[in-house]
Length: 338
Image 1 (cartoon, one colour):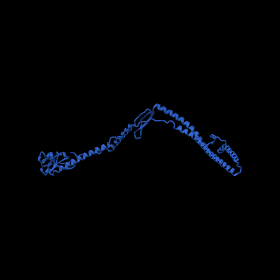
Image 2 (spheres, rainbow, N blue to C red; image 1 turned 135 degrees about the vertical axis):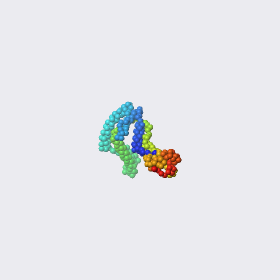
Image 3 (cartoon, rainbow, N blue to C red; image 1 turned 90 degrees about the vertical axis):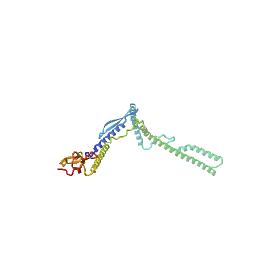
Image 4 (tube, rainbow, N blue to C red; image 1 turned 45 degrees about the vertical axis):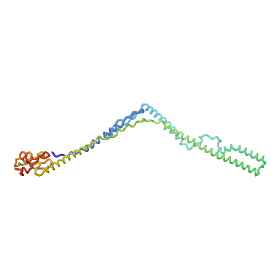
């Protein structure tokens, strides 16, 4: 029946630190579980703890090692690449010289099959003139055989027709000559452009040669992150439970006291078990002691003890349903002390 004491509050800071430490341990375990060493026909991948960070967490190093045949192939590819780079450098030097040349060097192209200084038009007319001369002779012979004299109107008309025919041939020769000239110029520029791009294309081809291959690793199942024990929540829940028990005891004590004091002023709780700091201050006229005391719930009092009254006036002592004795002061008289 002692007065209950409130439970002390838990160490929230310590519980929080312990919870954080548990979460950190869980994170470390997850990280270690997710670093799966792998072995493939092309090589291996190993994870090792190689140190600690400034906060004390382990730091990892991933080491990839090629299989012996793959390492040999890589060494050969590296040597080949170095050789190709040397060749590419030679091509680069040549390309730089080519790009530094001012314009297209036409003298380096094959000569067209005509006489030097002769135009395409002249070359074509040189081939057409014998035909034109034969046609003119045939026309003159024909007109003479027909009796058409030179200078006559018919003769002039025939000569005009022949001149127009020659002009048409000349126009055709001019047009064809221009086309041949343009084609030759296009060929010259195409050839020059090819000559310029050839070393550059060779460099690009050498640069895009055999590339180094790496092993293909599988993606292992990832370990889910799990939290450590919730010590902070457990501490708080335990404290709340203790507080509920304390509040229940307080409520029970209050209900009991209300019940005790609700019996009336004549019967007073006088059980020695409910009192502390007991001090005798006198003697009742019937011989039992008079005391001052403190009830265990904090209230101060003065009176007799039920265990001393019961042998003298037993009818004045009654038992409360709670199991504690009460004294009816009306039955032992109002005089307290002698």
